[in-house]
Length: 280
Ligand code: FE
Ligand code: FE
Ligand code: ZN
Image 1 (cartoon, protein in one colour):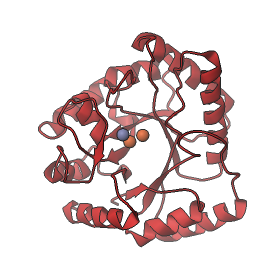
Image 2: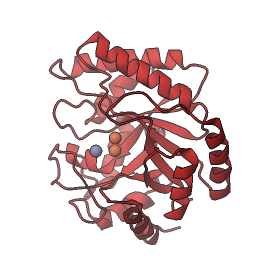
Image 3: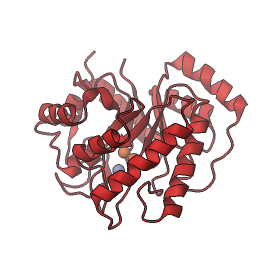
Image 4: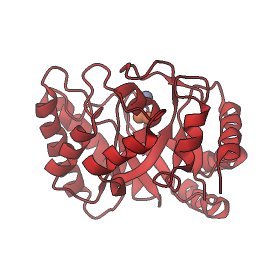
């Protein structure tokens, strides 16, 4: 089954997101676990979760992506800021244990001058504590591939591999591949998708790849910018997306759009376009 959907606002709860997803022809979605700029999460409403489970079962929604707030930094320079990230992520995972099929995606962080090696150790240390604190649950935790803007960690597959290795290689850690980010980072998914996926397999292992963010890029190859564009209107282009959504190594993964639209009708159009490009 083609799992396709988009990023949605979680302000009206889980069931509302499921209903919006159905209304735009999707069967998966992503949401921020809390205000992306941080702060407290809204308490989970058990009645909403029960309704959501019913809607999801009826409409074929089996996997959803919870995105951690992107302003927290798991490799921040101060203990207090790293502690804040750990507490946020621990609380997020506790809440996600209530919704089946959730994948928890986060940005590895920015080294803010400490250097990539030091940052990788800090991220692995945090993940070790996080997974120990959440050991009774099984929500997969996904490192997102990054564009390498500023001092971002995770724009090279090797960096993600080292984080996973330093966390003991636990099977709970996976990767979410963002098409805009990898293209901006210098992986040529337009002219050599097979080569990029072979490299991913060699360095990380395709068994770790659990989700794909579908975004075109406003900037040229290897620009390290991270500006998303609508599908087919950026430097990646519609033919490359046709190959991506049909590639044997990717086609069964959940694909989630994070493209710039005023409202969800824009996503409905993109989902229809992608469905027309999908071979079954
Ligand atoms: Fe992200
Ligand atoms: Fe993304
Ligand atoms: Zn991005």
